Length: 140
Image (cartoon, rainbow, N blue to C red; front, side, top):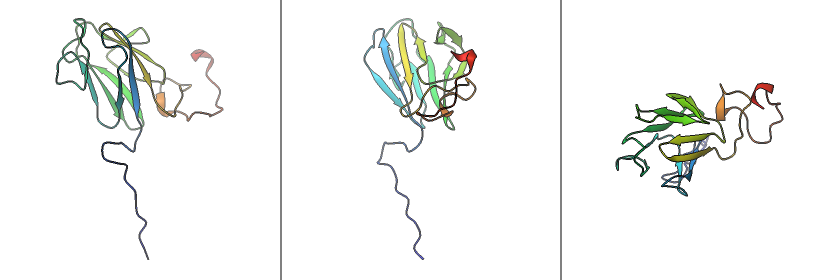
C-alpha cells in the first residue's frame, strides 16, 4: 500500500496563517511586511525584522508573533508605547484591520483570506471570509 505524500510549500513560504503589516504613515510609509510562524521584531535598531527610522521608536520597540492561529503584538518595554486602535497595550491579540501606532508610524494589520471576528477574544482566527455569523452589537 502506497503511503500518501505530503507536499511542502516552497522554501521561505509558510503553510500556516499569515498576517501583513503595511506602514501607512510616518517616515517608513509604503512598506509592507509579512508575518508567518516567525515573529517579526519592530524597532529602530538595524537587527530588527522591520526597521522603523524615527526617533519616537525605541531600538527594540515591539514584536508581532503568531500563537496557534492568532497573531499578537507585544510591546518590548518601549519608551513611547505601542498602540492598537488608539489604546496603549502591553500585549494584544490582533484583528483584521487593526491600526497599530509605533513611534510616528501608523501600521495597518491585515490577514489575507480572513475577516474581523465578532469577538475580540478570538481575533483573526475566528471566521473565514464569507461566513454569515452575525456581529455582536458591542462591536459595531
